[in-house]
Image 1: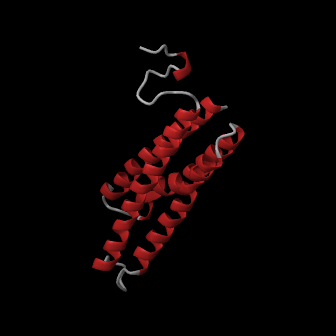
Image 2: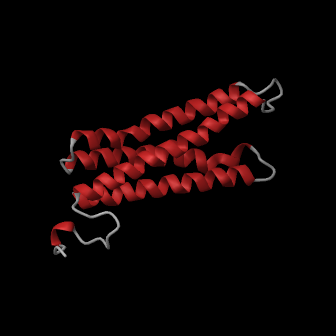
Length: 149
């Protein structure tokens, strides 16, 4: 089960990398219509929360320390913060829906929060690798099978 935890955390990390790609797709779509960020929205509001819940469940089943199980749930909270930041940024556009300096500043926090959540997921993945007995930076050979130098 601990190797499954390593795998699911890696998949979650890939989902976040893809999330940044989907944000860029939305940003560079011309003309930018309502669907420009559809992939970003679906991945962020459906795929990532499901993978996060699976990660926490597998961590619990792998008998991971409570701290790791809790840390595995942090991305759900940060995804909620992402949605709130986006709504708040949209609330500060002008009457015709055009961005204002304040809405752009708040929108920038969306990207910053995205970086923070990726950092959390990297930490969860590293902890999962350690729990599974894999040494960071190795070839995937469990540490207990590596002979001392």
